[in-house]
Length: 476
Ligand code: CTP
Image: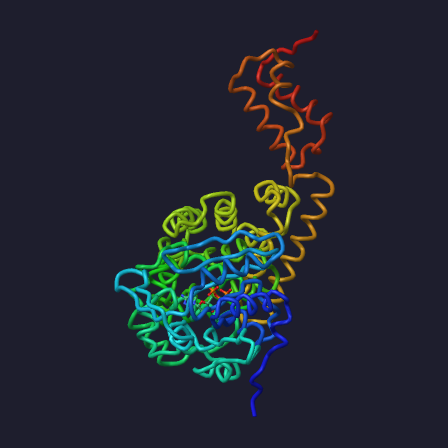
């Protein structure tokens, strides 16, 4: 017989406090949702604990807080009938069991009190609807009316109710289904996939912030292509990231084809996830080719070209972040920079790698040069093992050269060795064009390797350049 009691999940004394508080109020209470799911999946103990009270969740939260050391504050969300307590790293969320139905056109629920099972029914997935009793008579007993345990075993995302009801109640769940499938490497029941497909347009009522939250979680997973493939197949992707959808397809003219940049992109994203956890670098991988759709051309002599796609793509990054209400801050600028520079190391590695080309790359990429190399390495998706090896080896050489040049020239955090001030005093200049010309000439001489990145050499060069410009030196 399957195990039915999981007391060992409730060893944290907080559960005893909740149990005793429920007894004092004469109500039943249960832990439900992610905490139970993650315990059964052995994913470690979740920090968010959701508690359902068959009665007032707010009253239970207040009672629990009064029993805890330091009487932590209770945040009450009256409209939703929920209350939250923060205790150390733990976040406890209390809600009264309810029968819930939603207004079409909004996510605002109409709420009525209900039993535990009513509450479980209205949850998103069977694996999130499992509850553990906190009641004295059966403390730790699993209450699982929709066989979430079986679905954990089958690795299946399934809704407790008919999927159409669950998804139209809260269309965010369409994204959640895909996100859980990606995080857990689970399948989604066929009826659910069909329901997502039919309700896809309802994603429009979900705020961009929530959608982006799910996208972040998909991208933070070990293999994000699972999620993006599902978003694509269910028809949700055009509502969220149409720029990616535009990359799909292979065109052929006069026997010449280009690669399918949508599926290529997903491969690049999976590749980069093997080498970095940096969420924004993962975003850069996802968006690195978006400029290819609007710049695609066919030329009789050259075949398919995507001239300037990096520049166009980096401009698109701004628009995309703005549309999705993502932060327009240094993270966005980082993604833009990666997209803009995404072909630079490739061009470099195709030729003989000169020091000055490497110095220019390091100068332009600055502290992000390693991230850029990681992106370019992930971009190698050729199935030809000989080419694969060659490209990897070329990038290895570029990396070595970067280290070598950097050790010598310190370009990564480039600070002009001669300041504008010094140029002004040396030549007794007021703010003028000449200062910029001299500064630029010094920088160019360093990048070209004509002079080392050092003060004395730069000063001599400045004097020479000033003479060429006909400037006189202040001799005092
Ligand atoms: N839930 C739901 N529908 C939603 C959001 C949440 O039914 N749109 C329910 C699920 O039972 C879920 C619980 O509320 O388990 C808590 O939601 P949340 O904290 O968002 O997710 P977790 O399941 O805890 O998972 P994660 O922390 O990974 O997001």
